[in-house]
Image 1 (cartoon, rainbow over the protein chains, first blue to last red):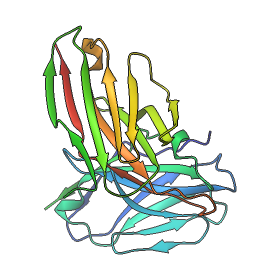
Image 2 (image 1 turned 90 degrees about the horizontal axis):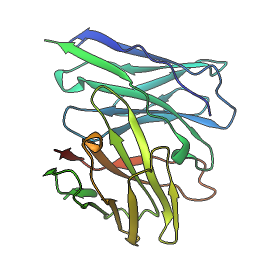
Image 3 (image 1 turned 180 degrees about the vertical axis):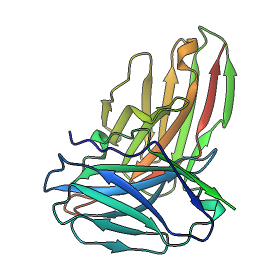
Length: 112
Length: 116
């Protein structure tokens, strides 16, 4: 199963953009790229996902490399409430979340 | 009210005791999952269920059992709890539909279990 690689931690200042990278060099053509985040003392929550094209929603943007071997989650203006662990995972098209692996993720610290 | 509810939120028990963690969902999803999270580590899959009659082991099922009482309810049991089962347990559902092409996971708030 395809795996992802993320930095252990990143730091940002409030109201500045944050770019969280993820490498997935063994991604297959049928894998969706998903991002979840886990706020302190809470369960993970869905952030965004995409297949090939860049995606935007109210929480974030997802930029996917042309070869799909890497992606970047973009928080346009970080707030203190964005401090969390961010997980990049791959889910097969047509189901496959039972196979997904939540690694250690990237712990994002947001400084006031 | 939360879409995925776990009870209890916290539980302290002793070695050898039988423990049941419960999960209920109001999202109408067929797929449900149980994960555990240890400090500083990612989530690991214990069991998953695609519908009431379909239950499967995850990567760390030893020492655990599950019951899918209804579409909305999925319980995790520790038949004889041991200290290394101390962890944060999460239940999740998935909105997967055949032919849909993708899916999202929805998690409960977790149950912190301590086995002394």
